[in-house]
Amino acid sequence: MEQERMIKLEDFFDFNSKEPINRLGYTEDDMKYKIKIIEKMKALGMQITLDKAGNICGTISIGNHPQKTIAIGSHTDSVYNGGQFDGPVGVVVGLQTAESLIKSKKCTGIIKVPIYACEESSRFGNACLGSKYLNGTITEEDFSSIVDQNALKQGKTITLQEAINFANSYLKEHVDDIQEVDKIFDTVDYSLEAHIEQYDSLKKAYKKNKQDTIGIINSIGSAVRIKYDVEGQANHTGSTPMKKRKNAVDATAFIGKKVRKLGKRYEKQGLGRASQVEINTPGHNGSFNQIPNQANGLIDFRLQGENTPETVLEDFENIRQQVEAKTKTKITPTVVSKGTPVVTSKELNQKLTTICSQKGIQAIEMPSYPGQDTGYIPAKEKTMIFIPSTGGSHNPEEHTKKKFIQPATTLFTQLSKELLEERFRDAQRVTNIPRSTYESSHIPTSKVTSRDTDYENMLS
Picture 1 (cartoon, rainbow, N blue to C red):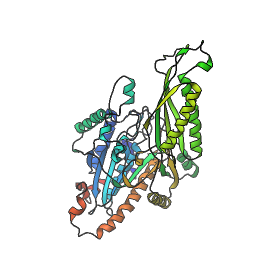
Picture 2: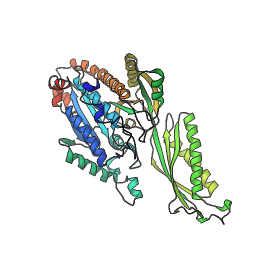
Picture 3: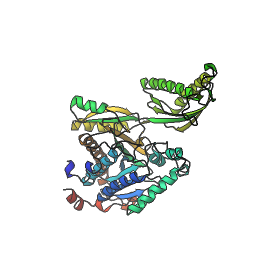
Picture 4: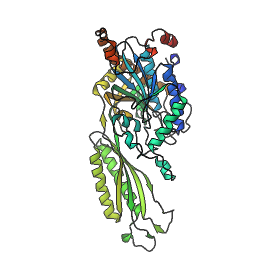
């Protein structure tokens, strides 16, 4: 039960508050929150590592012959004026699962609780930076070319490398015994992530059936993000005939309308969604009598199923050509980021479904339209689950309850036990193998590995 745990939800969440959270990636506020988590990792006996992208990981070896590695984590950073549950729920579920596994006597393996750096795109216009670094989508060489978009609007230039340097220096100053590594891991056998749904369909299912409810994710969406610039011609709004106008803002309006129509078609076909999310008119200054000659906009495409970045870019190119012809403007698009949807492990999802049935939890198979760190994590098998939430997400109204989070910990604990107990039985048959042959590629066993007395007494 919750009160018997060292890792308590109340240590990380105020379930009675809806204060906005501004914990952007690599900022001091995000580092302070991470330090709270690191303190709990240390209390569990975990070794703390910090990599060149700012990813953090708590690691512990359990059992006598650790062969398999499970990573159970998420992110802690937020959007501007966001909610408190998007991301951290997955890290805390990872900590609680690790606590339960450490106490188990029939598991052997390496348990990792990662905090992936800068999952949200709010600051740098590019999402999942930490997990993309782990799988090689971005490299250390890219850190100097990715810049803080909000700082740019204020006439400043802050590169991702500078932000990482600040964050990592802050952590090293405030955390003892933190080990610096190139990457927190190159690959893992299993990757698990829990996350709030960011919508209310699971909450409605819970309310309808009065039963603990979990969403099992079969596919993780990806994003194609496009920034475009429009070049028109400034002129007088009164004297210029309508057919002769080259209005840059008209072009953004037509693009927005066509993108919305395309997004509806994608959604109907199970291929994703799309929205124009921002337009600007630089240099216009709100003049009523002047046709704007410049505009720019941001388009967010969410891909799902068999949709590909190539298809999306082709569809947007058709829109660009149509709008240019209609408005007599010049439209120049720039692809900010692109990714391909990821299918999760059918085997792990089937195990989760079975566990849900055994424990009386309602399991709903569903896709994740938002991109997630899990989509990029280098793992042999990976999946994620959603927990019920309300208030949407990326706003202070986002909310969930303890009773919705606890089944996630139950599920991941049982799934991890099944995976690691299989390895435990295998390990019992190889007790004569020299220790160096199975330890050489892993972090040394923590003192809590021989936990059967001290650690269990602490939990009892």
